[in-house]
Length: 612
Image (tube, rainbow, N blue to C red; front, side):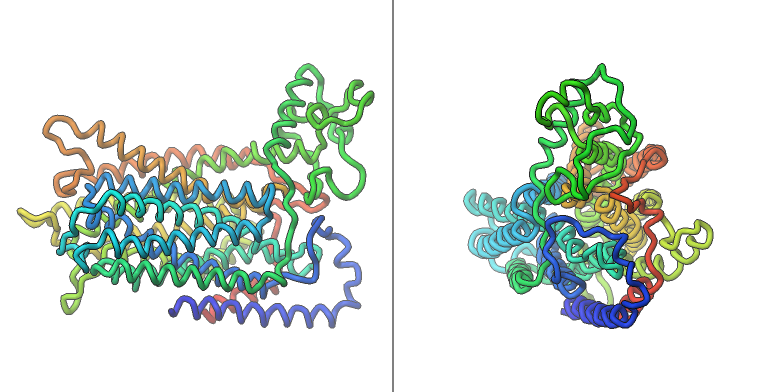
């Protein structure tokens, strides 16, 4: 597994860098004796553990888990059509709903980790569910679904499946959805937890970790989108599923190896009652004029009233909620009841959720675009000429490898060219802020849909009479996959950094899961859009835009529709981004545009990427 070796290489290089940084710190400790004083250790964190070595172990875990997940996900639409004999639109909707469920479960995992179990236990439990789901799928496919042996390869049809077999199949893939969905965003936040903000060399490490996290995710999926997809497409479905199962088992073992050395942060309790208390207290005091920021209620001392959370400075937005922290006569006559009087930090936690909501909603449309890559893009490629040199048949799902390569190349181009160039004009060493990156991702996603529509128009011109296939080469799809990959670098990495940095300590995992939740709703939105389009366009003798025989439809119009909706979404996003106010914790502003990366850290990251 080439991708696995490269991820391990990243871990080794990062570990060497960590040791070098420690040596440099020892040599310079007399020169900067007060450097640590301006940073505050997050409450309830275990010390003398974590760092890049443990974070690198989590990156390898993510790469292996992603390999296992995409070993199932990338070809699922073809499994549904070839093995379970579903129609194209039904299969596309089925995949969209399943993928949406995967990322919807991320909210469940985030809520449990932030509130009760903590991130380590949550990751371990959901990975275990993930492993059981893959094991069940591997057994089920061979025992009940794939008969005769080798069927589902596009030429040999499978026998009708039994009700029991189909039921177990759906149970297994939704166990996979539950396990992977609950694990991924929690793991991202757990990786960021390995860096202690009170140590200067780790101040910007979290932002670097999220870049590596998405880097590892794409390396892991590269094997699935090339080697595994070929075996599955040729009828070796069970073998492919067993490889995914083995990868998930290895990921779990490696994760458990770091148990004694991880840096743990204790859960901060259920955030839902805290947010409800703010709104309830504000409603009760609806006729009260909110006090000035320095007169609002806050507990004494360096720690907030929320267990495990730092204090958040007051902001001027959403002034109505400030009433919840405004002290009135009734509050001084009895003990402080959080349903009547909330702290500034508690109020600001609710404000953060409100401020992030419009930005998050605007990212859902992007996920509608992303959802096409696992459904309609695959079906489009499946009816194109995929024969290359020597008569080799290229599986349609393997075209997503161009998306992965685009992500890897775009990451390097972004860091080496765009960041320095944009930094000269903006004065921001990071080049673009997270909000600017997400907006750029929306524009590129719109162009990807236009490219997909242009490919479909050309494909319909080369339809072979009397057949479902077109003589147009499948490589015409390359531009749309490359554009989607490029947009991911701007959108998804920007999302991870943005939601994590803008989320208070008590809801860090929930913030990371918002990125996954937008993917979930994007997939559900894609499914709903297909249903609506087919209901409107399938009239009389018209088969609709996305019929079972794509040569009789107009999938190009569907792509143009998504491009138009993305353009509208981008305009709304611009307004929301301009309105957004950034969170401030203690005396340290964490506004993405001002949270610049040190020169030494950037050089270390560039060296790692160059070596890989």
